[in-house]
Image 1 (cartoon, rainbow, N blue to C red):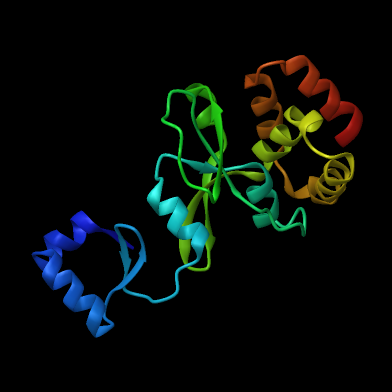
Image 2 (cartoon, rainbow, N blue to C red):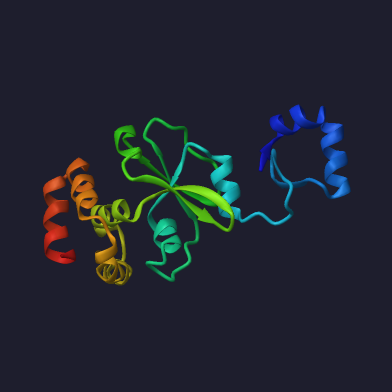
Length: 179
């Protein structure tokens, strides 16, 4: 994918960009975003459009296969000071910038590299936001996490839990409900 500015640099002007679009060699996938492939997953477009965000919560749980419930909105985390994202496809979660890089990784999604929190961080997030999730949804994801425990890194989980606000509560719930 390319921004309009990158396309101007490559093709010279909007006229030549439009020529490439009309000839089918370039495709407009969103406002100001172009691709050389016709079909780009919407999540990849959203992630490209907002590069300072990280996929989290419902969207991450779905991508990791921890739930089969398809999220209505893409949940993206940004630093607390970030401007609100005015996009009807996105649910924005604000967090302190010191928490934003903890557990950040990338996954390959249909050929596109997307920033996302790793599974260990998402387990901690599940516990942190337990009260905001429906009971059945929480239990479904928690049960799937229990099956994955041998594949997860317990040191990462402990380190992430220790770095979070209300760490004592998070650690207690980890001990009583997960392990």
